[in-house]
Length: 282
Ligand code: PAF
Image 1 (cartoon, rainbow, N blue to C red):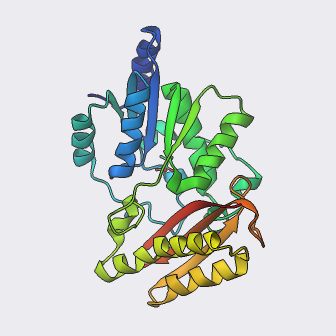
Image 2: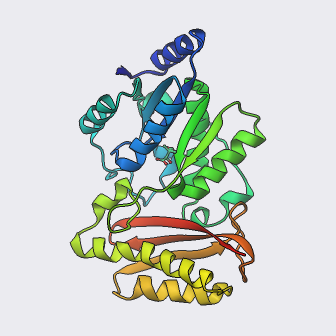
């Protein structure tokens, strides 16, 4: 596996891949890799001739009181996992290379970033779209792979690609869960033992809501209240939002008719956890 540490090295490598007539898949990550990331890399490897994984803890997507400094980093273990998987290249840019002194250009997707996570994480999506667009320009991938755990992020990236006529196929892949249902996330490692048990309640709440909808429930107020009861029952979780919204624009619904998304953001100890599922009431 080629380890590329500068933007110039990355550009030269991907230029060669394209010159050789090969397709290139990009898996952007912030490292501390888990099975969710690896599933994206596997999918890229099975559909593209070459796969590059980037690891960059992007400072621009963290707010002033967020966990940039403590975000888990385990570069050597990540490198070994990717090597074992057979990924072709690992891109490891530095913050100084990505955001040199005087950097002042950002990409901002408007309305859909005002909803859900955008309400409590004001800087987040602007940071994500800026870094993802930079990665697309540097790596020039044919396809890029993102997890559906961050479904709003995925839709925001799709919107950017669409609005700016970028030539990159965006592939979203299903949430990978721990055996107890907890959606895999690098931030799960912040959870202590009791918190970890509380964290399971997010998936439990989603399952309960899905079951109620399957039984004919259409009132969003009822679903929200049932989910809140499950999540708050041990008194260890602090709900940021419980949303039942339309899956593209993230506008809150009152009644479920047809397709909807249920999305949760919950603080458990130091971790802010998110999870979601799509539902359909026929
Ligand atoms: O989902 C993530 O890990 C990050 O938001 C991403 C897409 C790698 C951008 O930094």
